Image: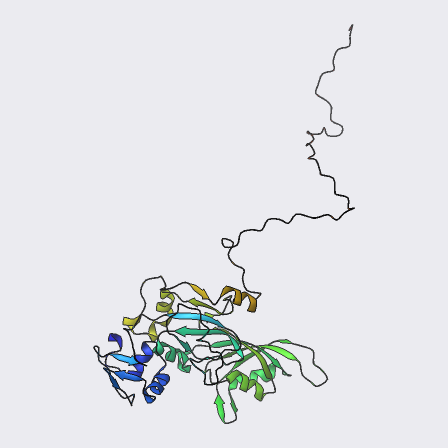
Length: 333
C-alpha cells in the first residue's frame, strides 16, 4: 500500500480498486474493514506503508498501476456490485480474467452503451466530477413532440422538481410521423457535462419527451465506436499517460506500451452473437471457408450440358486490309 501511505483508509481502498470512497466508508460502517487485525468503526484512520489491510478477511495487496477498460453495457444490468433484490449486475456479468474494477459513473438498468471501468477508485472519482470537463454524449430515442428551438432552451440549464441541471446540448436528428394523439418517436443527440442521476431522462421528460432508449456513445475522449455488446476492451498504457496523467499520481502511472491482459475480452461468444446478431463476425483465421454446396437436381429435370472451353480465335484481319502474303504461282506459268 506504499502509494497510498499516509492517506485515509477510504482513499487507500479506493486507490486499490476495492471500492469507491463512498462504498469504502459503507464497508467500514458495516465492520468489514480491518487494519492490522483491528476492525475499524470510523473512516477517520490513516494508514502507513507497513499496515496490513483486510476487507471481509481478505488481505488487500499492493497497489497496481492504474488500468482502464471500455465496456459495452447491455440493457437489463444494474451498475452496482450487489443488488438486494437479486437483479443482475454489471460486475456479475463481466468476462472472466478481469481484476476487481469499479465504474466511472453509472448507467441505469434501462440504459446501454459505453461504461468506463478502472482499478483506480481515485481516478473514477476524478472523472465523475463535473470540473473534469468531460462530456457525456448520448443517442436518445424518445416519444413526443418538440422542436430544435425548444431543445436549444436547455442550453441555459433547467430546474426539474427542485433539482438544478447545467447546460445541455440537444440536437434533433430525426422525427417520425405524428399520430392522432400527438406523439411519435424521435431521435436526439444529447451531450451533458454533469451526469447527475437519470439527468437525460428527467430533463427531457420535463419538456414532454418520454425516453424509451438511451445509448451512451462517448465519455470524454473515449467512444463506444464498434465495441461489441458485452465486450470489454482495455485502454493502452500510453493512452492513459497521455489523457489521464493529471488525475493519477506519478507513481501509479502505467509504464511501457503493452497492456497487462488481452486487448478485448468478451462474455461467451455464443451468448454475445445471440444477443447481438449485428456484431462483427469472427476472424477469418478462426472460421474456415465453407465448401460450395453441390446442386441437387430433382428427378425428371434436365441437367445443363457442360460447357466446353472455347478456343480463343486468332487475331482477325481488319476489314479492308490487304493481305501481305504473295499469291501462289499457277501451274504452267
